Image 1: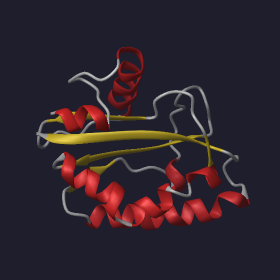
Image 2 (image 1 turned 180 degrees about the vertical axis):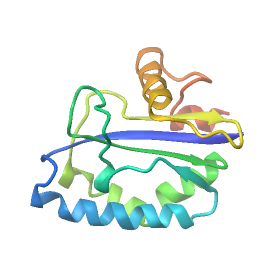
Image 3 (image 1 turned 45 degrees about the vertical axis):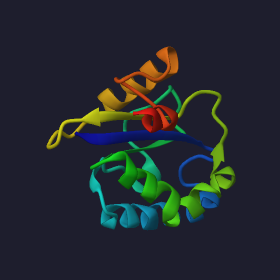
Image 4 (image 1 turned 60 degrees about the vertical axis):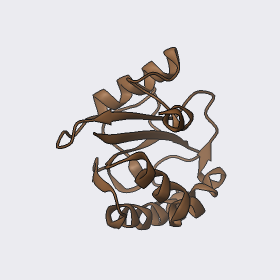
Length: 144
């Protein structure tokens, strides 16, 4: 089994705003680091900065990341032990705080690629039901 990861963030500024240039540049580099990281399998291709044609949470300033990893340890290593962490710690420069869960994890069969509809459904399930085998968070992953 592999692990899928989906996260969203609400940008402080509209697309095209010059205050997002450093975020867009950082995202491009972090995506390259992810793709070369041990355990990386696949990522949903978005426009620059994580924009997609689909509106998530009824908000055009929501950007997203959807990826698949061989296992939770590989994902955890990428998130907390690479350049990603440095960029993550700067999130307040570019993102508004969300008052609900913004990240979900779930298991996927090897060779299966998930999609945005599935990812959104799982995030909504996590928000309404809490962590389950269908949709979970970091804390639930540690228990497994």
